[in-house]
Length: 413
Figure 1 (cartoon, one colour):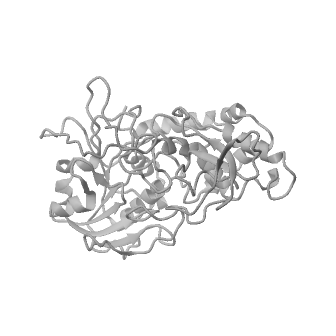
Figure 2 (cartoon, rainbow, N blue to C red; figure 1 turned 90 degrees about the vertical axis):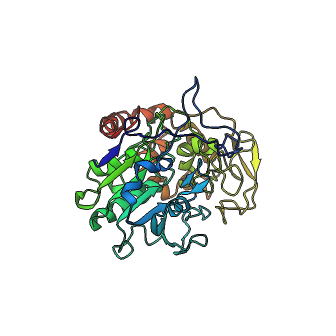
Figure 3 (cartoon, one colour; figure 1 turned 135 degrees about the vertical axis):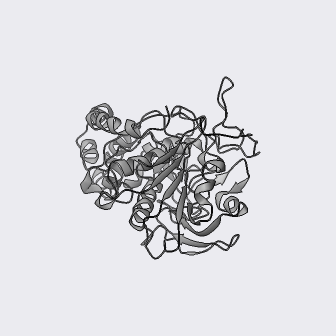
C-alpha cells in the first residue's frame, strides 16, 4: 500500500497554526470563516503544511510537482512550488491538470505546455492529448509530489490525473508522494457504480459518483485494487492530515476550478453535473455555476428563476449564451448528504411536455450523459419514468460492495 506517515506519533515539533487572513470559501464565496472545529478541536493541517514529514524524501532529489492553484500552503502564504524552492528543493518540472497550473482554463479546454513566469520552472500540461506523463517528460526526475485539491466526485478529473501520474511513475520506477487534503464531499457515498464499458477520463474506476475518500486514500485504493495498467504498483507515500475526519465540514480556501466558486457549488456539483450530459445549462456563463440550472424551453410557470448566460472565466461559450433561461435557484438549498435526482427527473419531465423537436424528451440527453453516470441504466430509468427512490434502490448493492472495498484504504475516521 506504500509508506504512510501517521499523524500524532511521528511529530517531533509543535505546529503553530497561523491565520492566513484569507479564510475558506463560504457558501456565497466570501472569505470569512476559518476551518476550525467546534468544542475547542484543532484546525485541520493539510499534508503540504507538514514539510518536516516529507522533506527528507526530497533532499538531494530532482523533484516533479503535480499542482495547480489549490496547491497552496495557507500558513506559509505560499504556493507549494514557491515554498519548496524557498526550502532549496530542486523542483525541475511542474505538471498541471485540467484548467492549468493557475486554474483559469475552461473545462475541456486544451492547455499548452510552457514555463512558469514566477519561478522559471517548465510547465507540462496533463490535459488534452497528453493526460499521462511520458517517460521522456519524467526523465531526470527522482520523485514526484502530487498536491491537488479534489472535491470527491468521480467525474472531477483530478483523480484521473492522479491515476495516470501514478501509472507513469510506476513504469519509470519513480516514487510518488501525495500530500493529502480534505474531501469537502467526504461525508457521504452515493450514486451508480461505473461500469467498465463506460470508462473515460471522467470515470476511470468502478466507483460510485461520490466516493467519500480523500485524494490520499483514493491513491491507496488505485494501488491496492490493481487499477494501474498491468496491475503495476506505484511506490506511494501519503502524508496524512492532522485533525481531519470524513465528517469534518471543510470550506476550500481556494476555488478548485473556475466553475466551482464556493462551498455551495461544490456541495451541489455531484447532483448538478448530470445536467452537463443534457442540453440544460447548469449555471456556466454566470457567477452561480452549479448553483442554478435552466433553459429557455423550461416552462416559466414552474421554473420561475430567470438568468442569461454570458461568456466568462471558465465558460467562453456556455449553453444558451445570451438567451434568457427559465430555471431553478439552488443557492440557499441545505447541505446535501446524498445525490438529488429530483431536479434532473423534473427537468426531463417538464421539458418533455413541450412539442417534439430540439426541446423534446428525445433530445434531452446527449452522449456525454452515460459517461458522467458511468452506466446507461440511469438514463433508461429516467426515460422509463422511475422515481428517484426507485432509482436509488438500484444502487444499493453496488454501494454496499464499494464500501467493503473502501474501508481497506481509509486513513481517517
